[in-house]
Length: 521
Ligand SMILES: Nc1ncnc2c1ncn2[C@@H]1O[C@H](COP(=O)(O)OP(=O)(O)OP(=O)(O)O)[C@@H](O)[C@H]1O
Image (cartoon, rainbow, N blue to C red; front, side, top):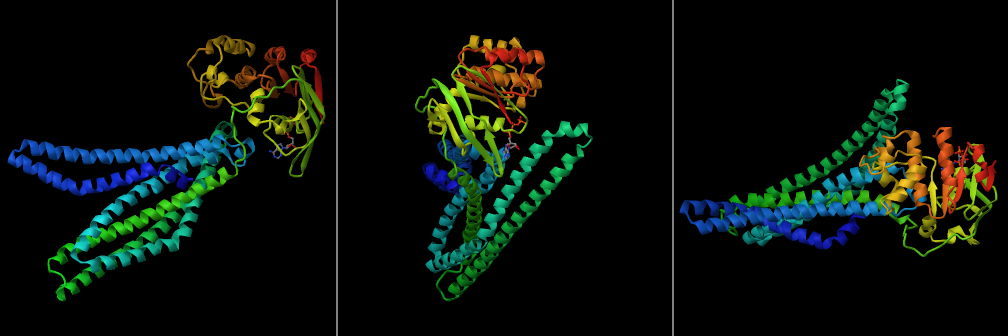
């Protein structure tokens, strides 16, 4: 994926390359500018002073611009990853622990930022300095440059021998970091529970264990890098001495003047120093690219896109469920035959584990690969464009999810709804009216709300967005009898909606509102 991004932003990269060259040139010229500034001060030459000063400022300006462009690349990569995650289907998204995505966008981005782009641009800078030194060495004698190039090529072979091991270690580090994020999420969130058991020390124990693995993998990666660097620098030192030796011989043979010996050390130091630096940087850069391979793999397995502007579709008569079975491996679940008429109200009851949530997940097309038929107005649901289908069906899942936004934003999900409609929903859900225009946020995962309030926010969101069919999975399980009666009655009184309501506590007083009650066994 990184390769793709680099290709896509090649124009900016090549610009950055030019800027790096100018920046490197600027670094060398800065001494000249300083000398010019000092000379102009001594000579009290005002125009020369301004000239040198502007040149000096321009060099630094370019360096700053270069830094800005470099930053843009990382932003682009983050955006690309988020874009790909957003486009994944329910099934693909859940092939991974959500914390892995968090790790991609945090840890992996840091690795790519430091080890990837940092080295990429550093490598570009070395190339420029390398070119300057080569020109200078060539100026003395072409044989010196030829020998330098041959040794430099040998140096390029060294990291190739270690490439596979380095890539593997980079991936290992990235994986242990994913694991670390997952464990931090799992155990830190369990704090309240563990506190009541006097077992918060478990957090320390579990996180220490996974931290040790991160440390071990990082040290192992660091060792690998150190071995490569020592070898490259070793060859670089030997190369410098060899060139000095050759220069000495050439002076004795009368091919070069004696003064060259004083300059060649510096020049070869620059040449081989930058060659080894370049090799190190490019090696680290290319192994950072390997991390993005796992993201590519994820993207290749995406099969479905959420394009909400797809062809229109309308629910006009009825939805039929006929001989549907779903298997989780060996566990085969049989769904009873059911019919849901437009604008009808249906309850689904049944013992825990009989497949009610599984059915709802099939119905809202989170799960595919079922046997049997689910027909909506005589059309198999899997044949309808998924985005268009979801536009008509709203699903309120068993586990509610409240974002750290205001009540209004949580209900509307930042869609356009009139204030009066939002107010009506807040009333129907028996939520506090004073929250409607409040700027107060509801806290991460609704931490500023009670369990029952969070559930009513989720139900309100569903009711507000539902156009045709509202599917609710135990949506009132955290509410007291009086509130759940009120909220359920308000939902069931909506004449235009088809409601499919899974519940463990069917309110006898509300039975009259249901057209049919289906029982799972
Ligand atoms: N992702 C999954 N992987 C494997 N098995 C699963 C998965 N989800 C559910 N199951 C199994 O499928 C069966 C039906 O689960 P489901 O959640 O649909 O039941 P339910 O009737 O909704 O239960 P409850 O009333 O307790 O919510 C259970 O045996 C459950 O263990």
